[in-house]
Image: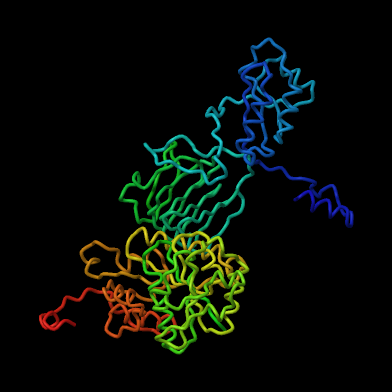
Length: 267
Length: 269
């Protein structure tokens, strides 16, 4: 967007000076999918990837992929990185680069013109679970509190806007605020579902389900003026109504994740 | 300008057809030319409740399919000159409904009538969808129990998102609540949701609570809308509800349990 405006200015009157900035730098967090290569034999790589992508085409469409070579770095067989890259591209995925390979492998990768990304120690270890269809994933009632994330990081930008709903959200309705916060200026009925990649604010009663940070934003919160929810979830960690203490029911609360526990706090 | 009103609930057996018949008769009594349309294709009931079953020749689907014109299918009720019904087909099913067909019929009715009341079938499928699609106002019939309330909530959601007014971004469908089969005594005993509970859950204006009454069953079996029964509390409640629907501000009766006094019990009030 920004480059567009600068370009159009430049094309228009050509008033650019050296002091006029051509770009600006911003820190941005993009969630990527890490693909861990498990063996050097790639006979079934294409078939398996194709099958995986078909399970959730939307989820994988143009998703950035980092190829991790940690598991194969001591494998002496030569790996055909070019075929890997082409297969990944053919599946409409974006190969960002490689990491964690042996010096030999990384050199080979570099010579082929691919990026090498820095090693990171805090790697995501949970295996990705695919969303069933879209965000309307069904939750089975929790056996115990705070289970593993159901919603897994999807490559998206950072939440920057909000979506506002003025009408009551009725049973059976589902509202999803993609890449942003969700503000509901009314009540959310039992059997309704409100979902956001960012925070959720409810200025009526929350009787339905509220899921904030569904693409893995653990800092997302739910703010609500009257809590009677069937289910609340932050970044995939959830609690059902039976696991909500009475002292916070029908109260104005905020809900956030603390040490991977869904925490409810009265205002 | 003719108004299309849908009477709907989601759940079955809550009193939609009784309410449709009562509102039809109530509006006709106030002098409006009124027609009640049975959308429950395949499960025709309205004609029975309104005492017209012996005069059904053509029906809704015949008109949609061009086998009859609208005037042939409309039946005038015995009790009121300006109250008509358009019966459903008993032999066809809801697949025979088409959007163009329904729209054509409603447009035809608009030329003659002030109020067109669409008696919706239960459920949220085709019949219910077409009954509510063209509505200007909706009367949501609910019983004071949780499943009925939740189904009504679902219907309100569909009205707010899938009706013509929602799809075409017009002023939203105006929503009204009728709480049928209400028993203040059972509310006190804790067996039933109270009016306030239901209002709190659904958050739409209440036209009236209709007390559980034997007169409703009696009226249905006789084929006379209960509102025409001068001695029935349910009829009175519907009568009030119709007045409120037309904008009158009446205090609610029948909401609270009144213990009958000694003389009340003696003479029956």
